[in-house]
Image (cartoon, rainbow, N blue to C red; front, side, top):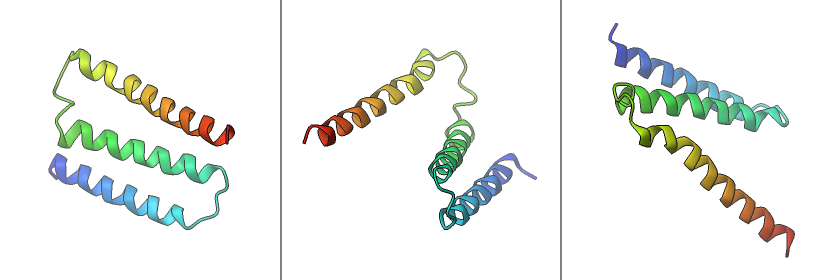
Amino acid sequence: MHLYFRIWLILIVLTGLAVSTAGMDLGKWGLLLALFIAFIKSALILNYFMHLREQKRIPLIRWMIPGILAVLSLFIGITFLDIALR
């Protein structure tokens, strides 16, 4: 079986898992599970379909994820400050 076909099947299974768990009442774990599934799916897409797996030793990729997390944290922090200071 071709590698891309296997990755596609894994993505379909993960999508089905995400849809099925969205209807369950998992409490605090629901959001964490949804983010974990989204992380796995995005990692598969980035590595195999966007061919980042073949790109070795690129400093931009090494700094991309911490930069994105810093910007996301900044946006979430500003949103919480806006809500707290109303």
